[in-house]
Amino acid sequence: ETVANPPTICSTATWSRNAVTVAGGKESGTALNQLSWPSDIFVDDDRNVFVADLHNFRIVKYLQGETTGQLILSGRSFSPVALFVDQNKNLYVSDTSTHSVKRWAEGVTDGGELILDNRTNQFVVPYGIYVDKSGILYTSDWQQHQVLKWNLSDSSRSSVVAGGHGNGSASNQLNEPGGIWVNEADETVYIADTENHRIQRWSPSSSTGVTVAGGNKNGTNLNQLIEPSSVTIDGSGNVYVSDIENHRVMQWPVGSKEGRIIAGTTGSAGTGPDQLNLPDGIQFDKMGNLYVADLANGRVQMFTIIGNDCNGGKSHL
Image (cartoon, rainbow, N blue to C red; front, side, top):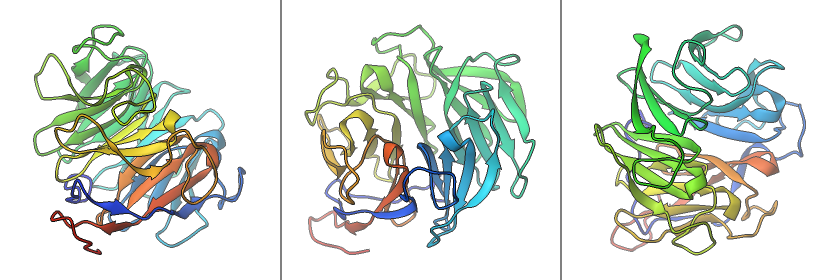
């Protein structure tokens, strides 16, 4: 599975400057070839794309190569900010309107199984979600400034894996954490620490996090971020960030003090194929192509990987 075993990507890899629109992009609207404020995406092993279409109150699935989606879930009291599909093809959605995380088995289009809510669990507003192959659910709580995990066989019991010491910028704190990603090889959690303008890495049982991207106040320099919203990693351990207010996606190689722009242009929001406007959810497919939920443009963009030779050459995948 690509999520548990992400593609190996070099720190010198290159992607196409111009993206291909794989979902939406037909102006904001409610038709199934349109999106309105897509906040998160999930790309499965068949390169189908699930979209949290926030302002349309729905989840839409786009089969690989299709420009018209399939309606999976919808509801007026439904605010899907994040989603995840586990190895059994169960769909999980973080819903800020009901302060809950629900699960739908493949093919189920109504109801949903309530996994967590703020009445029975110790969080207020769930945001980013991740489910590992062992059935452990991780979610960020941006209002309580922490990341929690649950064993889905007993969701009444949770543990804090990051933050939990109020909002702040100390190494044991977070400030409105957004998207999260888990390295399943060692259970390390990567967190978009949005209002601290940094990405934090928390090892299991650690009481503090390590800054692996940003953390130099908000700004446009290559060692800075502005309100990063989503994070993922590759098989080499490089970190990728949707630097939302800078309208760019960045790669931060392992151990690097600054990142490099791999999609979009700093401070340049636009609708061109080489531009982004508030990039939010990001993910790779199994080949290393980069998918971006281009929030304000109402589309999902795919940037094709064109060079991935760790010796510096042009190895086309």
